[in-house]
Image (cartoon, rainbow, N blue to C red; front, side):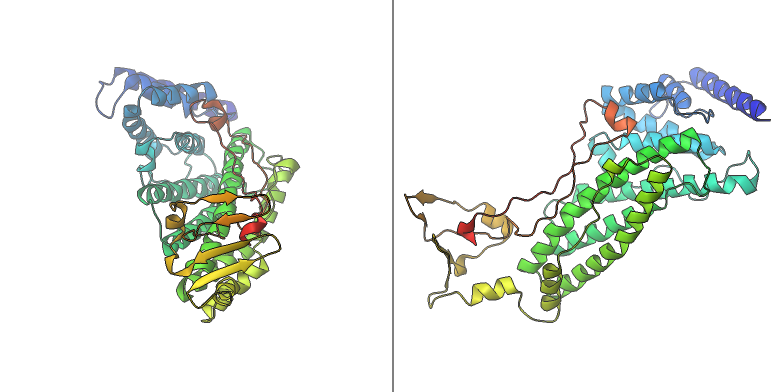
Amino acid sequence: MRLWKKAAGALKDRYSILIAKLSPSGPCKNPGLETVIIKATSHDEQCMDYKSVQRVFKWLRTSPLYLKPLLCILSTRMEKTRSWVVALKGLMLIHGVFCFDLPAVQKMGRLPFDLTHFSDGHINPHKAWVFNAFVRSYFAYLDHKSSFVRFEATKEDKSVMEELQSLETMLGLIDLLLEIKPRIPHMNIVLILEAMDCVMDEVLELYSKFSKRVHLVLWRIIDTGGKEEASIGLEVVKKVQMQGGKMTMYFDFCRDIGVLNISDCPEILRIDEKDIHELQTIRDGGVSERKNLEGNNGDDNGVATYENNNAIVVRDRGATATISEQKQSNLRTVITDQWEVFDDDLIVDVTDSPSNGTSVPIITTNNPFVDSLSIVPHIPICSNYVLPDLIIL
């Protein structure tokens, strides 16, 4: 039975390739590209044909204009298929397309095909449900990720509320990723494990980006946010704390099935209790300790002064600007043997060098799509912060 199924799948692929070669070219049709896509998404469940995958990506590297026919051809194949193998390979292929830093990919929005209700029509329904669930959950993540990438690409300078919205969306994306997993203990099919390698690489990268970003946004709320921002920030913190347990369980599961190595497992994100207290104070209508410190160290002329054993830093409170404006200020420092004297119009930003850094390990990728794309190098995400110089404390 298994041999017959394999032979039937091979015949279907050959027939599809023959039809593709005889089809005329057009804006959404390219016989050569279609042939390679069919081979990359074949019915062979043993493994992914990475040679054909790389040939698909070679077309895309040649010119971004091939993205449109690529999506048209792949969408047609995904909408017609009732094979979980073809559907999963198509998702892995479109996942690899996201590695290309192309404006057309970033602005794609929703995926051009729908596998929300996918159901395999070639195996027993009692056995097919685990594969159907895997395909549907993988599609759900990629579909939402595509929408999020488009949202991020259209926003340049974000307000605090928009940053919070992005954080909540990223939390939702992480939850969707955690749903992509084998549903039975012994689902050790090579193709499933290859897909899990891609998923785990995505989890590590997205979680690292989120870990870095959440601290920056929370510090920004403490510095410039109001009650509403602080309230939403606390909700984000609550979700982060709840998600930590899910992440631990997911990492343990992936390690048990051989997808994740112990060295690859990142630290679970922790939010500093002092930051949580600051947010609660702002939400309840109070003033954060940082702002209160500034208010208690001013003179009659509206100038805030901070002292330590080595230097005095003077800041004109009336000239206080936003973080982006402060970075554009003309900063000048005069160095003497014992003192560092700052000009009277200097604005010192104590928020650009946070005092509480969270260490997130550098991540390497096992994603075969990412490793093979020399034009899109993988840049690990790291959020190790350098402690500020004592002169600005």
